[in-house]
Amino acid sequence: MLKQIQRRPSAGTRRTGYVFALVFNAVALYAIHAWPGWQRVPFVTAETAQVVGWITATLIFGLGVNVVYLLADPPWLKALGDLVVTGVGLVAIVRVWQVFPFDFGDASFDWALVVRVLLAVGFFGSIVAMLVQLVMLVAAGSRARR
Image (cartoon, rainbow, N blue to C red; front, side, top):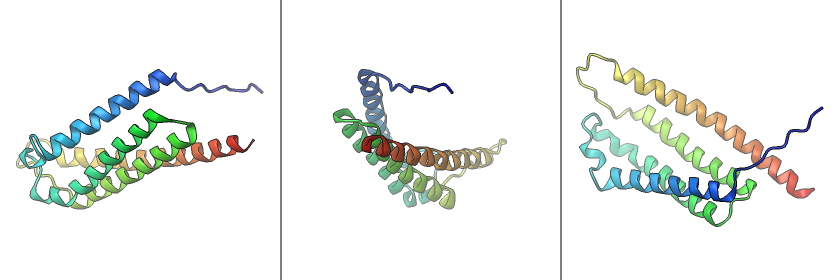
C-alpha cells in the first residue's frame, strides 16, 4: 500500500490567500453597509433586513479567522476556524432560504428558481465542508498526540 503524503501550500501562498479573503470580506461588508448598501440593490426587498445580520456575522467571522490565520495557521486551528465560519454561513443560508428577500418582478426567466438552486447548493456544500473540517480537526488532534 502506498503512503500518500499531503503537503500544504507554502506559508507565503497561504498568507496571500488569507489576505485576499480579508480584502473580499471587508469589501463585501462595505458594499452591504456603506456603499451602495443592500437597500440599493433593485431585486432585494425590505425583508433583507431580517437576514443581513447573519450575512454580516459570516463576513465578520471570516475577517476574524483570516486575521488569526495570518498570525498562525496550524492545521487544527485552520480546521476549527473554517468549521465555525462555515457554520455561521450555513445559518445565513438557511435564513435567506426562509425569508427569501428577493423580488425579480415580471422577469421572463425564473430567477427565483436559480437563487433557490444556488442556496441549496450552498447548503449542501456547507454541510459537506463542515464534515470535512470536523474530520480534519480530529485528525490534526490525533497527530498532535503522537
